Image (cartoon, rainbow, N blue to C red; front, side, top):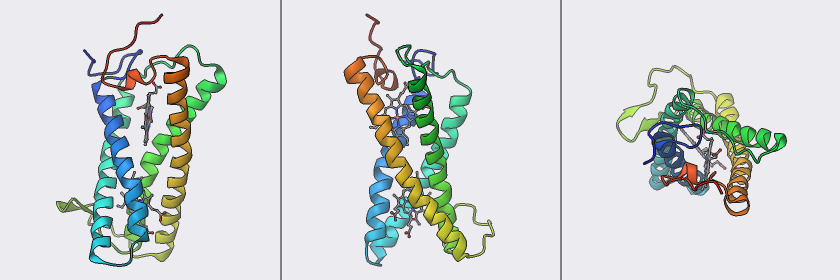
Length: 189
Ligand code: HEM
Ligand code: HEM
């Protein structure tokens, strides 16, 4: 039985749910962002923009919950096999991924405000409708640059993250991947 909360040995159900739901949202948001920006102006293109913005705001909500949850829970200890440099790398990549998960929704939102566009959450309500950010080309371009470079930073961190997971699961054969999955841990040999 997987505990609800994290322990020092594994991630709990809530952290697992938050990790994988955000992974799914990133897997949709990145291609969506790239496809919609490459499309000719059309009603379909603006539909995809709306969907991208709604899904991106959902990441924003989930990441806030995730950070609070991480704060009030034990963080599973890194495997003892890691040396000082590898610990630093693992923490650095996780911290970088958290930064990307925060920077992307905020820069996207500011890009839209700067362009004078509203952000609606799945047709339910406008996000911060009273935020009086006047239309500003400078803000739009600055936020867009952060959004685009943020995506590049994500590609790099994602590559390192997956390289780490592969190394642990297939070479070191430890519990690193298992403890982020809803399955029980392997006994230490
Ligand atoms: C984790 C969340 C997000 C990710 C990973 C993400 C990713 C991306 C990517 C990869 C692009 C294509 C960039 C390019 O190469 O041109 C893009 C474009 C865009 N995103 Fe996001 N995005 C996120 C959240 C948001 C949010 C919350 C908003 C707005 C509320 C937003 C608004 C936009 C807009 C307006 C564009 C098009 C910019 C343009 O016109 O060139 N994004 N996004
Ligand atoms: C298929 C893709 C992915 C796999 C297989 C994967 C796997 C894992 C695993 C096994 C861990 C646990 C590491 C440990 O025990 O220390 C982990 C942690 C983590 N992952 Fe991923 N991950 C993926 C995608 C992502 C993505 C897209 C993000 C961010 C957008 C992300 C962000 C994180 C963060 C921040 C942690 C640190 C633990 C936490 O605070 O939740 N991962 N991941």
